[in-house]
Image 1 (cartoon, rainbow, N blue to C red):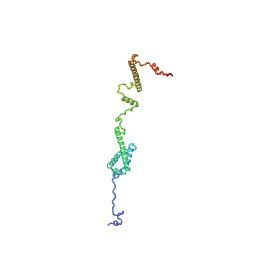
Image 2 (cartoon, one colour):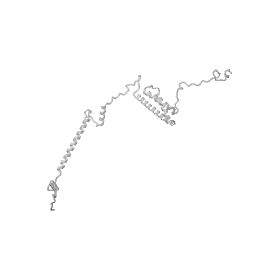
Image 3 (cartoon, rainbow, N blue to C red):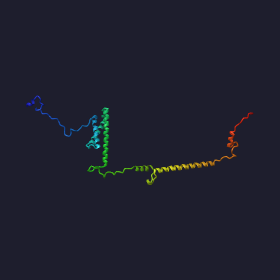
Image 4 (cartoon, rainbow, N blue to C red):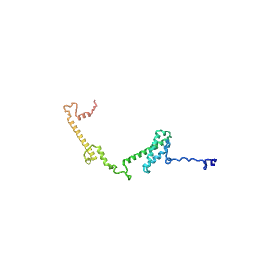
Length: 234
């Protein structure tokens, strides 16, 4: 046997004992992050994910997988909520977790709307600019006068006349007042005519038909106003 193996410290350097090297992680697999196992582990990852996605939507950073990562994080958070893992958290942490999930969901909704708008504009050409021929022509802006004309045409009856030949609102108001005044004058004349016709048809009693006790107005007043005097001999 070798003398080195008889050493008091067989595991020291220089001894005959061969030591095994620790296993090194494989390339490309050591930096992978395992999925969060609880809601408490997922909570600190939600806000950075939302912030990175918002920066990409604002154009401050280039797109490099933020959207896919945000969707994966939202799926994990929704799974935690469905499995009721959030019920094990403290009330303050549970409220913060739900708030961060809501913010991430809203940011993802904005990102989806932006992607839908970009798809509706049409594919880009080789220079990175959208094809102008495939875009729909933009309509001219509607002015206030046009809106007023449309409102009047919808409010009034259908007519085939030219809008320029139609009277203005002031002229129509004056015509309405003139019609009302003419109707009032006509009604007044009719009432006067009816009163006159009614007065002529009433027959007044003649002098022979009046009762004998009836006297003229002045005589009756004199009889009523006559005073009675008493003589001293009475």
